[in-house]
Length: 198
Image 1 (cartoon, rainbow, N blue to C red):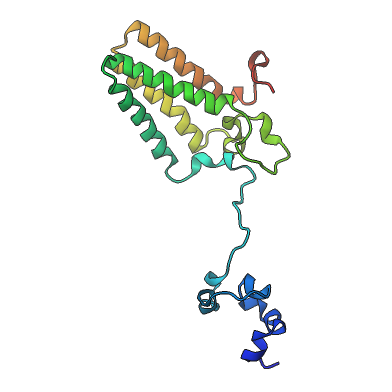
Image 2: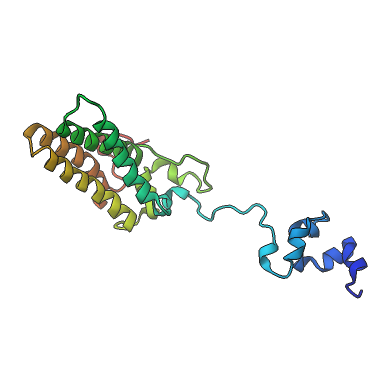
C-alpha cells in the first residue's frame, strides 16, 4: 500500500493512517476541510469528551482567575446598594455591609455541605463544608488567607466609619467572630454541639 489518495480514502487506509487523522476520520466519518488542513499539527485534532481534571471542583474554585476581584466587586456593589437607600446613615450602612457579608460568608462557606454537582469521590465531600473542601483541606493557602483577611479588613473599615460606637462595635465584633472562628485550623471538621453534623 503506497499511501496514495485511493488508499487513504478507504476505511483500511484510514485505519492505517489513524495517527495523523482526527477522531471522526478514524471512526469512518468524513470531517470538514478545516481539520484536514491542520493535520500536520496536533492543534487540528478534536478533543471529544474532555472534562476538567478535578475530582471535586469545589477544592479549586477560589483559585480561579478573577474570583478574588469578583468577590471584592460584589462586596463593593453591596455597599453601594446599601448607600443608595436614603434613610440609612453611613454607620448603619457600614454595619449592614459587614453583617450581610459575614452572614453570606458563614452560610456559603461554613454551613452548606457537599457540592452543587455530582462528583466521583464516593461521597467524601457530602459531609464537608465548602471551607473544609477548599484546597483539599490544606491550611494557610493563599485562598484561605484571602478569605480570612477580607472580613477583618471589612470589620476595621466598619469600625472606623461607625466611629467605634459601642452598639455598632459589638454587632460588628460578634459578626466577625462568627466567621473567623470556624476558619481556624483547630475547628476543621469540628461540629459544636452536633450542629450541622449530618
